[in-house]
Amino acid sequence: MVCLLLTFYKVLENFSIKKYKFILFFMSIVVYTIWGIFAKTQPVNDYGVLFQGSKQMVEGNFKVLSFDKTNYFYFYNFQIGYVMYLAGLMKIFGDSLKALKIIEIIVMSLTNLLICSIGEKIYSKKIGIMSSLIYMLLLFNVGGSSILNNQHIQAFFICLSIYFFLKEKWQFKIASGITLGISIILRQSSIVILIAYICFILWKLLYNKFKDAKKLIISMCLITFSFIGILGIFDIMTNNVAPNSVIHGNLKYFKFLIGMTGGSVYNIPTESAEKTQVYFDLEKFNFDYDAYNEASKDYLIDSCKNSREVMTFISRKMISFCGEKDNQVEYGWDNIKEGNAVKVVQLYGYVQYVLLVLLSLAMSMGYFIKSKDFEFSKKDNHYIKLLQIIFIGFFLVHIFIEVQPRYRYEQYIMLSLLSAPVLKFIYDKLNDMNEKLNKIKGVEK
Image (cartoon, rainbow, N blue to C red):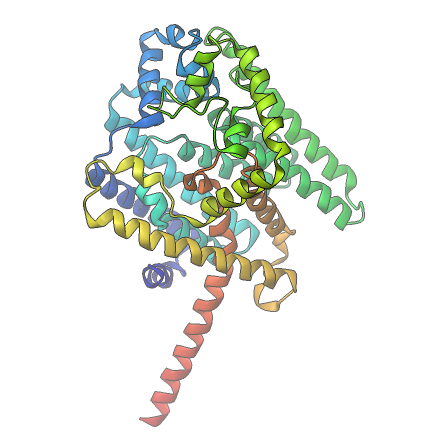
């Protein structure tokens, strides 16, 4: 895969950025379409529930689900934003799974273009090309591209928000907050990006010794207020869709309970996407959410008193989160689970992932020690720090909540952008060595 990546880069590095982006978009569509045709994935597990919920919304029956305290969409009401997105697409294009997958492919392909633009803005044109090729060819993402997954559209809006954040004018700061708010509506883990923006701006304020303090503080306020504003507007818009706010979950502690203990109040095993541990816990409380939230809080406090056991669980959980193969392909492999394609995706995808982590670490160390090999144009403005903060932020937040290896999805964006300069540096060194060898051979002849 590295050879394939470097071959693509060698062919494409001297193209104009417009031509390259056109080729990248076309290549992305081809790669994801080939996998989609091969995998023939049907929506399963939570993805299947969300797909069916969207159909019910289009038919006007969704309230029957969202107002029912025993239903998936009541206790996981934060999923309603994505359901509304799918329902909106269905109203325009019909409820054909094929049509929705085509849109998913287009969204992922547009995300690749944004990663190229972000890399170009932070570093240079050639680093933008390298980072987008890395992300496009990441096998974990290719293997998951056939799934109707809220992470795909969330990643698009995260990248769009970061792209706007990198621009100087105040209008773009507002756009950054709005697009980040939309990503939160689709998947709540995007809150990490807002925290990262604030941390980065505060760090820059201190680093610059309060130079341009007014500009930085205004930027932070514009992003935060536009973010809060879009969530407020969405809350008003969804008054009739669900009995309570779909931004604030009806279950306050269950993510922390699973994330810090690995279980639930009664630890009754999950049977299906709709009948999980949470469902059975609520059933024991006769779906009294206030009583369940209070019991969950007490159970969590009692569990944390045994700090050694909790720390042991968390450390094992985070090793699994960071070190295991990405499991998103498991939701898209019913038709190919016995074939070698899945083994290739899992094995070589894992090799890619480990390599990206190592290259990103090298980039971070190189930047930290001010190595000339890793310094680029003055456009940088320390935005590498923003990428690092976001990556670390997603790691830290998952210490306390439920994890699966597929939840690393947002971190792959940062790894692609952080590893690209080192990979280009290696490519340049190899290219120089090859040219010197060719000159020596030419002299000898």
